[in-house]
Image (tube, rainbow, N blue to C red; front, top):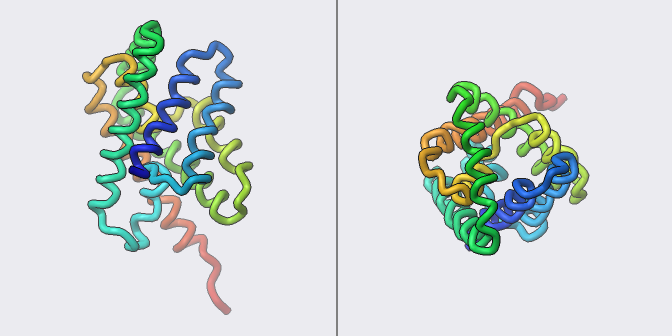
Length: 194
C-alpha cells in the first residue's frame, strides 16, 4: 500500500507537469511528490533502491516496491485521463520525444536522476528539511534526466505501452546511479576513523 500511494503521488505531480506551460514552475511543483513520499514514509523505488547494498531488505522487496509504484501511478494516471481526456495527446507526445532518445542515453539520464534522487532523500533523512527535495527535483527535471516512476505516469496517461522496454532501461539507470552514489558515499568518500 505504501508503494501504491507513492506511485500515485508521483502520477499527480506528473499530471501537473504535463499540463503546465511554465516548465520551471512545474518542475518546482513536481517536488510535491517526493515531499509527500518523505513526509509520510511512503515507499518509492527511486528513493529506496540506493540503499540496496545495506542489505537491510531482500532484493525482492525492491521489485515489489517498483510493482506497487506502477500500480499506483497507473491508477492515478487513468483517473487523470478520465478527468481530462486531452492529457492523452500531451503525454503521448512526451513519450514520442523520449522514444527518439537512444537507450544508452536514457540509461545515462536515468543514472543522473538516480544521483539527484539519492541526494534529495539523504538530505531529508539527515536534516528533516525539504530544501534538498525542492532543489534536486527541479534540477533533474530541468536537466532532462529520466525518472522511471514519473515516466510510468506519462506512459499510462498517453496510453503508450510501447515505451515499456525504455522504461525498464530508465529504471535500471535510476537504480545504478543511486546505488553507485551510496557506495561512493559509504566507501571511498567515507572518512576513516582515526
